[in-house]
Image (cartoon, rainbow, N blue to C red; front, side, top):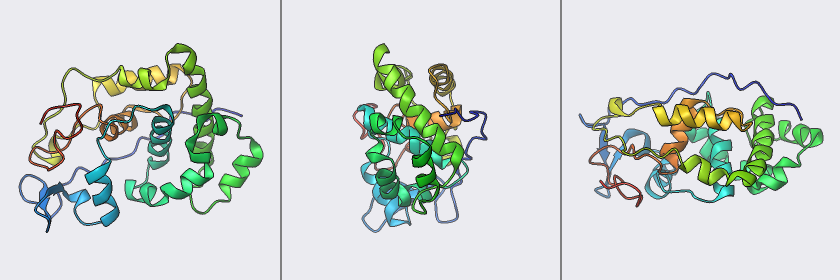
Length: 219
């Protein structure tokens, strides 16, 4: 299985406050809870924000899934990926890295014909490549230990969406470390989004109801 070119344009992260938000970029819902605009209207995104985004992920399969989905998100909206996540899990054997590492050209053809997922050959190949890299990392302490070793000493404290970073020194270093281990589609912006999603950094806006709820960082 060939390795795709990792020099792929990074996704653009939408940090705009939007017209429905106040000066802080937060919207208070009917339940009285303050959320950023991106999590305030769509029910699926609201559930994801309330229960999952920013919560620690410390198991190999869960982390491999997050890395895979972040790669598929490049150039698309996260809402698109989230809606397709059940189909992704079915198509990629629950993101079991051992199973995905065994995927071959017939599997690639099957995935390219699956309308339930993002049918991008380079991203599909990257997922298989990254599954194999995940297995190799077991000899060096594992994917989870490697990714979490880049947790910074401090976390951002954004007051508005404009203050939320899109990359950091740690995400740049993590990107380089993963590429060295053979991973693809792991650019600094993608890795910062991963770090946000799995609680390595806390970029919940100050005043949002989720700020400081991960158990990793104080409010």
